[in-house]
Length: 207
Image (cartoon, rainbow, N blue to C red; front, side, top):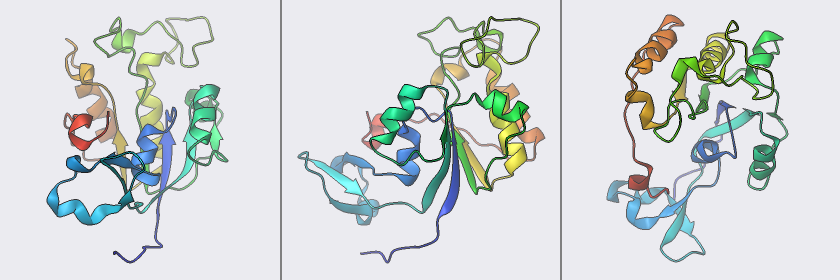
């Protein structure tokens, strides 16, 4: 068995939701044993109570701050992980009011996918929804749901983590105006090298 590593990469979670992405970094991860490649069998911690599933060893990441506007998501998150530092204020407002973010090695999260998804209206940057889904939309302001990714970029620029993980749906790559290129450029503009790929979660044992 691997020796425990006391070092933890401090992690900020944005657009946290119920914590699915967080769990993969700093929480309990349960997958089907057939999804684990032979060279990674040593990552198994123990069998899970559901036949065929196993729990993986914890990673060296520690989520120290979470943020999402949905209080219901925070409640569900609390069933599995600590929520002491879970903020339900809009990230747009956190930045506007210059609320300090903790120092971190990693920032992770996925902005709302509604405006990119094939199941939605695909408004993209022209989304007619506000950042907090409460205010009356004003096309003259730049805080719509479709440009919330800029808030993610701003947090990365402020915190200067060693790395970040920006997740979203495949539909982001199939829009006619290719918004992925603008998003990549905005991250490059704050000093980061960018790589992206399409991943199928079912290939990793995750529904």
